[in-house]
Length: 292
Image 1: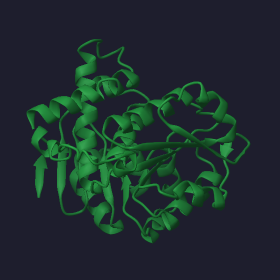
Image 2: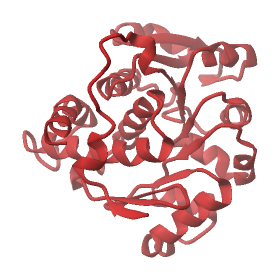
Image 3: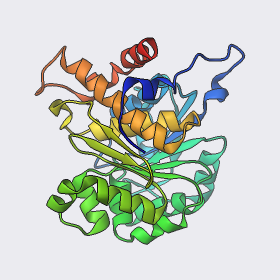
């Protein structure tokens, strides 16, 4: 099946809630990221808020221990989970990650985590041991590009969200070739590694190897650092609710694009911030429900 994502495709994910529910009903998302070079504490908080705005019940932001104090002044809706660190980067402590995974229904990893040997160990551990859907973005993708075969060991469903350059590193293919053959490259990679690929571009491609969704929402104003991280947070929020990886991914892309379109109406294509987009997510979800 191949389609261009429309409002009706996303609205089915936002049905009326049962009155007999609680925060645990809607899942728990763990966000693993941050390092000394890319601290971004305020933006990690924004990611968590965006996930809450698409319906997740609980958010855990897992960061190097040295970042905890900075986050405590920014985070009001999410819990903070400190991780061991070394030289400003997350250092894999298996017991900590096992504790983080308890009652977690989705994990996103890679935003500002840094491209180090410890990152590679952390990403490999999550691929091999995660007990819930796992989304890999940014430096998590750089980590697996050194040995993409580690993707073949996953026990749970995986989503990767590369831009064209990251896809080139993952596949060894030329950037221009990928840009001219986005659907084919993404589909073949998804089939080979049994996962969902969201290939980011002006018209993004989401595929699980069988189905293809084309996203046409968005604006050139999104060509700015942090937009992809925000997308990961939205997709992760939907994943944590128990929505299938393919549906969560194409819906997340649509919501992020529509939120940016709405935000740029109040600003311009040069000045838009990813946090401006995040602030419009709730309004976009309301419109999706209303027009579903």
